[in-house]
Length: 302
Image (tube, rainbow, N blue to C red; front, side, top):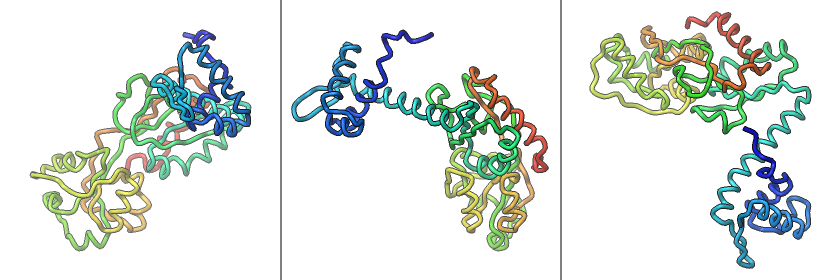
């Protein structure tokens, strides 16, 4: 439903309000906006008149936001930020075709980024913006067209396209592998194990898959695969890592497979997007290219 125009104050009034709310100073806001102090004051009064509510308490010389003004400032600040981002995107690509994609840090830097030049060369009209996200978010609240997600097809309010499954394997630095001399899965619970915060039960699942009894599984905790892998390379412990993302470290001998006992992770990689963006041409082009690139990847079964 379209918002009635009477609920849409002029942008100049909103910009003046945001500046005063942030600085709590008419003088500072006027300097920032290149206006006179009286002009800023008039903008604030006009906005209060339109809203029918007081936004500031004026206890000279102090200026304070009312409770309603503080809540309104948070919303207006976010709205102005989104307008600014949309303006920058349009200026960067005035013919349209901007695609903003949220990516998982390790998948994005190790698998996706090296392949993006192929997509961009085939779709020269698309301006691609990337942001990293570890957790799910609200598409309605963020200026993102789509997101690459690991888990299940259970992101409410979105459409999803399956990308690929993931196989993990226990790996460690060669020196640690030589020192521990692990010959069977039963020896793993006593070894230093490294954990990923977003998959806290991965080691328990692996041990159960291979019939290993354990009382507790402890070890260092990391928030991203990249730092987890670096800890393993440094000899701090054994990590469960996806082969397709760390193929180079394994090929170079910086990491070694401790036991060749792979496990298919419970989650999968998905491309998710809000339904109202389903037919957006840059997203349609990217979705088709991404699925083809994954299907053609020689490491797709790793």
